Length: 238
Image (tube, rainbow, N blue to C red; front, side, top):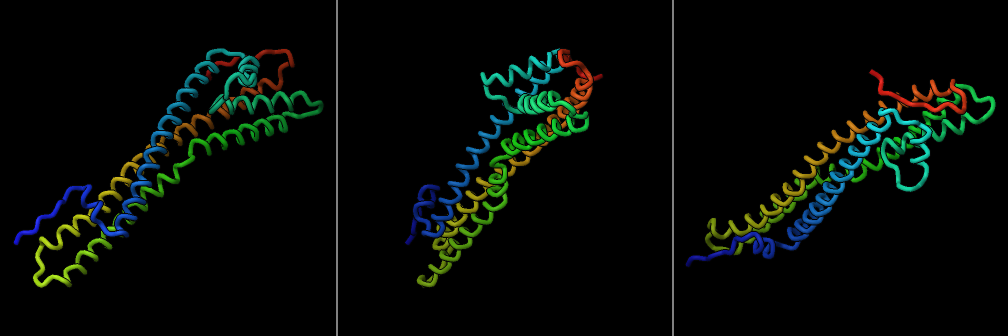
């Protein structure tokens, strides 16, 4: 007597045990959230890179610092990235410069702290949900392996009720269990690739932000010695 089994993916998922189904559901949810964050991070990093390019092009193109600050502080649009760092630093610079008796060291130190705090908030925004991708990438294979081990264990336990064990009896149960491992890898591989890629991209953005902060601080140091009515036009250092 030949026993036929439906070994399509859908049937194997439907016929799996409760524990394996629970594991598959967890992996499916992890994969769904992972892909959601992957696309969110992709668009966010692209936007941050594009805005940084546009602002640096304008900043080093001979723009007036006061004019740039007034535009950023006008509230007509939400500033992000470099422009927000510049706005925070220049705002603190103008506030401290207007105080009587403020020395250059306190002026630059306050400006640096304001830019650093804004920089950290920008980094926190860019790095949000990366820890979730790292967790999915490292844990999902083990969750899938747990489902596979449990399914194989149930498949072999079912052989105790069979007089003559053959591969045809155990193969469906093993195949159902291996689906959990496949789902674990499906959830983990994109998450690991995205995490490594986005970490690299964010590190490069962080380097750009830090370099800009140092250059802006040098410009503001020279600006501190100018009269209040002087406009500062900057050129990219060669």
